[in-house]
Image (cartoon, rainbow, N blue to C red):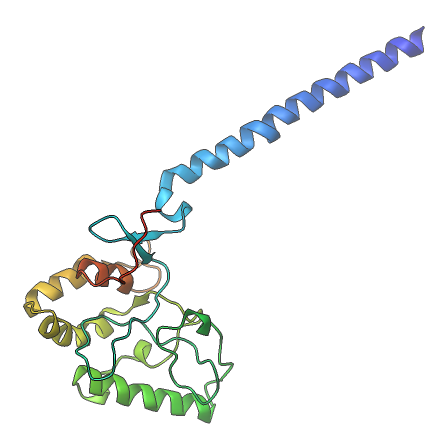
Length: 212
């Protein structure tokens, strides 16, 4: 009899613990995580980037390099170069599949040739002295799809973007300032310009449209 009573008490205690942890860990914890995720729905839903009409035209976290046909005026701000698809390629523009490292170290002659090619290309595109091209325009981003560039790289693109889009330099500079994020917490990292958001603000979006 005593054994049965003791066993019953243990069973009831076990069911009570099970019920408590089911409520706490099976309902309370998931609900808390979901609630916290709602505090910033922008990043929780994949950071979709929408144009003025509400169409999803990309992500503010993915810096795919927009391209124009050869010989056509280039109205876009450009992010950092993507990682090379093959060692012989210094560029892989507009190709998100190029999010691969080159595995070239600081002493690599291949990397040095990439940097030289990129410096010449960017200087010609922006009509500036090669010495004015900042370092982030010459080195590929670690992920290959970094959306941010330095204010210095944005600055050398302003004149071209203003001219092609029929805007004043001061208006384009104001937009760049609007889409420049300061260092995190004011001290971590450096100021950065979000290129996808800046191009959308200029009205430059892909033709495909989705409201999902």
